[in-house]
Amino acid sequence: MVDDSAANLAMGKSMLKDTYEVYPCPSAKKMFEILQHVTPDLILLDIMMPEMDGCEAIRRLKADTRRADIPVIFLTSRTDEGSELEGLSLGAIDYVTKPFSAPLLLKRIENHLLIESQKKELKNYNDNLQQMVRDKTAQVVELQNAVLSTVADMVECKDNRTGGHIFRTQMYIELMLNKMLEDKIYYDVLSSWDIDLLIQSAQLHDVGKIAIRDAILNKPGKLTPEEFEEMKTHVTIGAATIDGIAKRTSERAFLRYARNIVGAHHEKWDGSGYPAGLRGDDIPLEGRLMAIADVYDALISSRPYKPPFTTKEAEEIIRSGRGSHFDPVLVDVFSRVTDDFASIAAHCR
Image 1 (cartoon, rainbow, N blue to C red):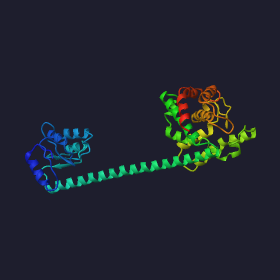
Image 2 (image 1 turned 180 degrees about the vertical axis):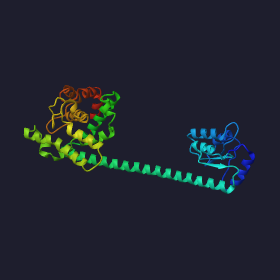
Image 3 (image 1 turned 30 degrees about the vertical axis):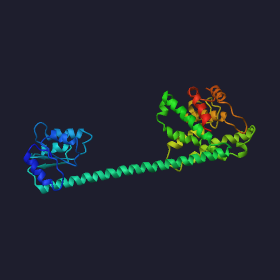
Image 4 (image 1 turned 90 degrees about the vertical axis):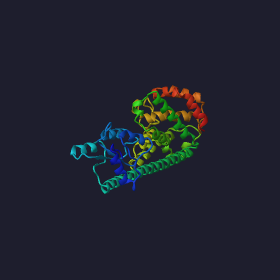
């Protein structure tokens, strides 16, 4: 309770002491000193005071983020409408004129403290609700990632490989994306991407191989032209699978990344790739990234039809495809992180 009148302070404390703990303050300056040690539930603030009046005091209170939420009731002998409007516009929650009766003052304080209590309860509820939503979202994302990893493992088991290929290609893509962001390469595109979603969606790049015969996937020798044509359908099958999922959900960003990776990672910069023969920038950037990651890992890995290349040999093959198989800008990025690619290849088996 802040008032420059000792009589008013004594009277006010007498009215309130049986219900509340009251801190009498003879000036606004003294109030701010007490506020260094006490955070009250409510402030009763006189307007007409020397040195610092109530209007200036409430302005300072509301400008202080630590104390801005403390409710303030103005106490004043003024009865004009303009003074009341000014007080409310400055942030006061009520306006009590002096002299005041004990029952009226007690009821005003009780009502406003009840409102403040309800506001705090509502805020706590909203905070808890937001945490519940975050927890549930995290559970859904965890489940999504588990399903994706399981599907990817199924593809790799069918393709007679370990799960290392999926993990390594994700690591390669993340490495290149970080370098591209650092060097502001294709930044206008990357700055709008959800990088985490993109990396997760990369697990599905070969999902269409589920539909390819084991005899083709694991053939120890070179594929016949007919067998190669069947192998190529894993791209269109995978893209159709993603499209089918998209029709059953409102989620779009994740599936857009997955669709572009699945459908475009066998396209080539010069237009000689498949399935659509896209050329240059017409190939989605996600697919151009996966093309480098996928080919590099295929080169350094053992396959039924070939032994593994060394990382140095794989690097040279990627570089030799600059401007023909691969986006030349991305090959330049790859060339700056080849040691990191080799490290991933060596340790993520």
